[in-house]
Image (tube, rainbow, N blue to C red; front, top):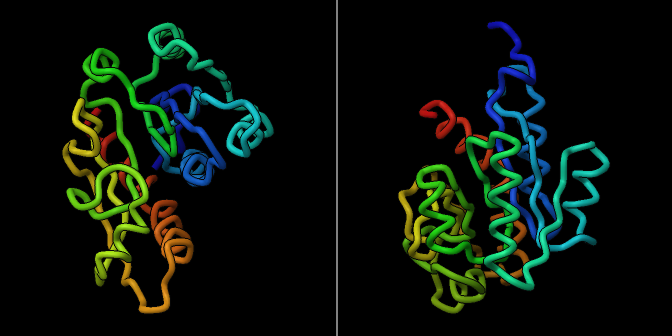
Length: 194
């Protein structure tokens, strides 16, 4: 198989708000021999986070968007996306809820990772809730983003066993490892249909 050049790869954007561990795994995948993606743009609502430092260190075009006014922020983001000809948006720990208008504009082009086995435990504090409910398994889900929170079509999902000794913190670590493996797999699956 011929190694694809950056120009032929599909341009994607990764949205972050924090440490960027999933961004790192997507970036690593984007640099593999048979990857079909090129991270053309990073959008963050915070400037001093590890994910942004990682993006800048690796010379990825990064835009910090002030969310003081959501409408203005999204207009700016749409402008950045269109300038960079973005075909897929990957939410990787982006802690803002996108508006219905934004989601509808990029229908079937936004994917998100969630640290639970959806449709169970939508929203926040998933690990605490999973342990409180004495679940035997947890995991993570990558899904398409729709206007209903954590309710879009599931692309890929994997589970981990919860041990009796697990705390929300130890479970979070286990799930994060799984997320890092799974996100590139989900992108590969989605990209093949673009």
